[in-house]
Image 1 (cartoon, rainbow, N blue to C red):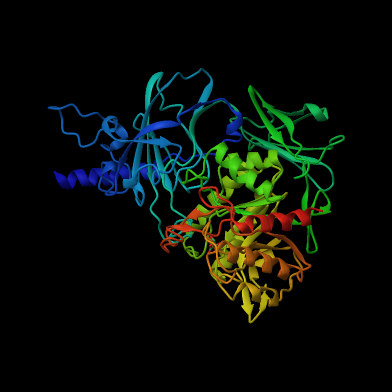
Image 2 (image 1 turned 60 degrees about the vertical axis):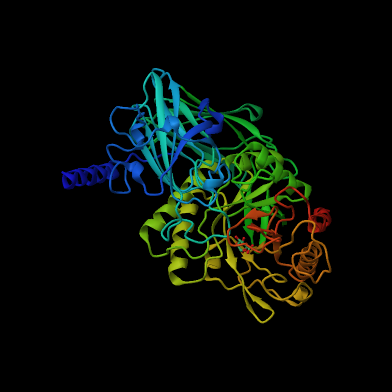
Length: 596
Ligand code: GCU
């Protein structure tokens, strides 16, 4: 009997995996009417994966997704969401319950919801991010699966929802695995769960699932609108009232309508003048509004040109760590706090390390006037020769571009961070670069590379540099190597004659710990690192930008020095409780002078 049950379960899961509906990506979800499913969800921790109801790692016929309820004296049931603990969505599970602080594994979420399908509409469940992989069920129907912990995805639920009472179950698995992206080791906390908002988005049967416009160096506005469900020849319109633009085009056989037109008297977007225009896209009965900035970004020799003029990137690195509250950042308030610190530092640029941040960050960067480096978590040594790893990296790259290619603030797509040079690694990232260029020829491509040194000479010779527009180099002179006062002795050249940005430098300090500038982990030592780095930069005329590591202390399991780190990477200019350190004003003053 048991063998038959196992065989059936395996058969069921094999059929299911093959038939698993894929997620998609809707454009501008934050500009569409939606029903929020944020709030309390029931949860079941499932380290042994019993919730699948099968003996495999895939959904089976009697798993938790059925959301059955136990009635004493009736059929055996060994779970019941209605009686299980609650977790708030959005939010990582680690910082919500002490028993989940170090939990890494499978966890099931469930909530009820009422829904009334409208005629001629399609309904999607929008998930801002679920770290790391997830299977989504509505009324015990698998509606999609997704892998990747930092990009949004949408699951169509039109045929699974009923009129009235419904329930959704989402299984999230955040185990770190060799073949995943990122892989086993990172210098940040593996916050698991439904870490960003969940909502129901309704669209017409024929709808716009992607729309973006950008300004070309020739002064043209170019872009495209993709319409799902449209036959070739369907009309699409773009209306920009303030520019008296009323353009129309028709879809090709793939549902894509392309636009290219010359605007009149355009005010270009820039950090100093973050001018956004209301853009209205229409296709059939679908209407989509966006707030769009128009600017150009190019490289010319070893310079970066913004709107045709050289720009020096006064940057700061940011992890998606929630100020004061702690845990994964997800709210508009978190974004406002983090980006306001960047503005207070006199930054014109932020690197959102090491993965796509919540869309609040890029929307707000558009409004506040901050240029953005956006990155996929191809971090350190991933499984370069595994085809699945490449597929997942490509999918995350696509989802990052698809979500944010409508935002003027985003100027750089970063393929990776500190990946040791090898033929497999370079071949892997070159495939990502080719995809990024194919998907978005309007932005620059970069990576944060490891700097190698011959004595006190930096050698910028990473072969990947040949394929990048902007070369990011990370270095920690004065922290991981040498002492701060030796920093100005280091010499740099730009052999590739491409724009170079120091994409990380800095050192740790515990807020409130004071002592001589020679005492590591004091605020004085950290400030000294910055002062000596600035002296070194004076002899690097080719430098087009600097991005100190990092605006705020963030959790990392690899930082365990008691009374100093206590589980936090302390390289922040601000403590995780929001206390500024001496180096904050050192950088602020340096950038104020750079602004002049
Ligand atoms: C590395 C890495 C960061 C890390 C930092 C550090 O360069 O890119 O993710 O946190 O250095 O060591 O603090």
